[in-house]
Image 1 (cartoon, rainbow, N blue to C red):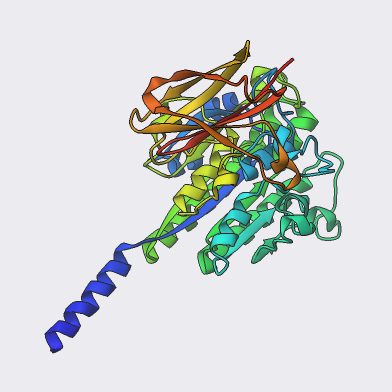
Image 2 (cartoon, protein in one colour; image 1 turned 180 degrees about the horizontal axis):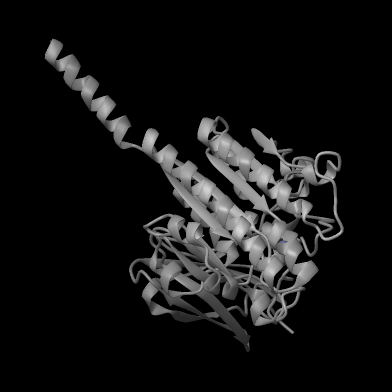
Length: 407
Ligand SMILES: [Zn+2]
């Protein structure tokens, strides 16, 4: 009897011990082009990304396509948060006038499934919480993070402003200090750290020694984060996914951003996680891929109608296919995709409405089921006349979607 009890106890204890608690922290370091990360010495970033990697990525959507998205800060943050481009999330500049909260952000997906779990924001810009996460918006669910450290840019007493923007260095330092303190002690399940100093130095001085210094300062902060994550993993039964990225690159001299030049579009994603997938390593991932990655890591199930809208592809786990393309001629819709895991079937759905945008429901029709490995097919849409189609491929490991406008 006693033996049996001990055995059951060990079984339960052993099982719970094996299940590491998964936690995520993502960092946006503002406005750092990929070439800077390639050439500037950042030993702490290298150390953090030792078993994961630092890879070239992009922002800005499809150049000249319907998803083209300005290479502007808040626009980039919201592309990350929602896994969609600006044509959906509707943040076009830093004013954040009418964010479309029908496209849920990563925190909302997470908290809806796990209301008891904790989220944190550590940020040198308050709008990230109030407008993008949407604490100030009922239609965003008034989601309030459990740990909040932001708004210091408005506190001119503690952080007196100087013309050249060096006060951002002090705020970033304070913000990272609060982040590591909180993570070390309380380990929120999902945290966002946002640091601004690099972007400010770019705007003020362009490429050069001030920007280099800002990168050095950032690297020190990343070092503190790295130490903290390693402390948690060593002392607690936790597994951490750290993702560090930027919201846009800069123009050729390093002052500005907002357009679609290569240097403004080319960014990077660094991670500590050793099991990134082939898509991450072989293709060029995008900022919109980060949210689907986090949700997959944290075992968050995305409702089908919301999954249909997400533009990003998970960077961990298996992926069925990427890069959906479509063209329409004489009522024949020709679609193409790039298969990655060449097994199973793709359910092809088409809708001629876009009610989702306004909080409504789209009437999708399942028009075809074909092997993922077929990589293309043609669909007769003469019975669905429209000047607009939304196409979704639902596959074993991921979904891809595309809009097409008929001229
Ligand atoms: Zn920016």
